[in-house]
Length: 285
Image 1 (cartoon, rainbow, N blue to C red):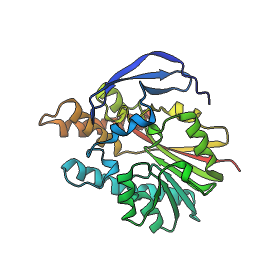
Image 2 (cartoon, rainbow, N blue to C red):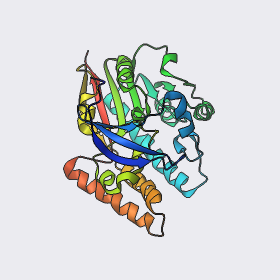
Image 3 (tube, rainbow, N blue to C red):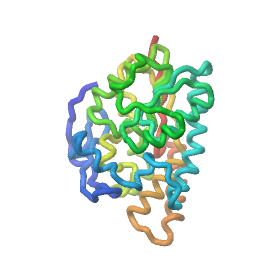
């Protein structure tokens, strides 16, 4: 995979709706068919963009109605995620979750008999995970196990700086015959096109990269075989809900978000361009 960015015209302009209100551009890398956020904050600057009580993946909050909706959907998604890794690795084994948040996925996997390791840079999230008896490492450099049966990134790859180096590192952590599972938003989905600059899954600048199905086919080396692609059906509803909130918080935004989420899934039944997709790779032996 080449790290060269072949720039074209700006794909879309958007902003950080969650924390700072700062404006950003998304530019198209035509070679890899992905978008990248411009300008990209360096690693030391990124911290401030996560410094919000509303960044819910780093909390277990139930304080607002939106928090409660997120937690309900998260419980359902956790069951599906654990079911997925059990279906591809019947004998279970050792799973590494990169960007483990507050540790809920690893706790659910551990309860099903998996050995678990997780990486999470956010201190608050690590502390919440520790209360669930799931100890998380601060970064990939702290991982001492050489390779894992399954490596997962649930809506994490889009956050990671230095994409080429990171992808090479992630690939090296998968054991021969093992699996890599990556969930990312899809900027070619109907809800992305409908909401445009208000699409919540752009989430600039926390999301540094924005992937298409084509990009995910080219991202890893030939050792990683893309076995299948699965939709995350609930994401279109939740992302539409946030997008409506950013665009216009009137009395009808709940109804509109539901119908846009529904239409996105209906359109994707034909196009396969769901709001978020799970990519399952297997490493050759």
